[in-house]
Length: 238
Image (tube, rainbow, N blue to C red; front, side, top):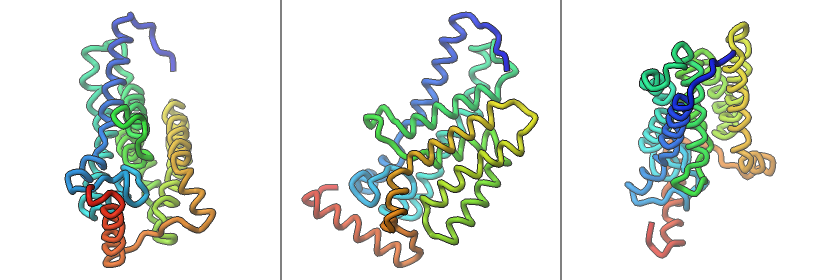
């Protein structure tokens, strides 16, 4: 796709919207929710600020809330920023899908490398899901089915997430063939980024030390043990 040559102020506004999307994506909802419940999510469980660790270490409802908010960090820049930016960036009128996709990528980078936390963030699964719902919902549907199959057969959240991250771009190349290449290319790059961010999980899967997801009372007992250990290790402060 050929983009028209834009005046400098249009490009500055464009960069400003991307920066705004990055800052939205960088909001660490998992960490904030954990602190609301008196838990520093970075010191318990997998020490990740994402929804899975909140689910396990803080509570089921709080984990679902974290996933929802992290997904919204990706969805809002994709859907809302192009509508707001059209007035400031007239050169991009008619290219809302590409503009929204780039804002979504900025939000994912914000989640993975948040400036607020010295660029140590999550793995981008929920935020990527939010972005993809906005730009490639059909591919997301295929990815969700893949995630469910892998999760229910293995009970490894990380394995299912990486599998879905590879299924989505494969579906994207098929579903959006004949259209602009930007969408499937970005889907592929985002999928690879998700897998890369799971490198520690890959090592644990290979050594057999990765935690399987447990349902019901077992999960609650595991959460109590994790938070209790954290209190002891930090002298009672969370």
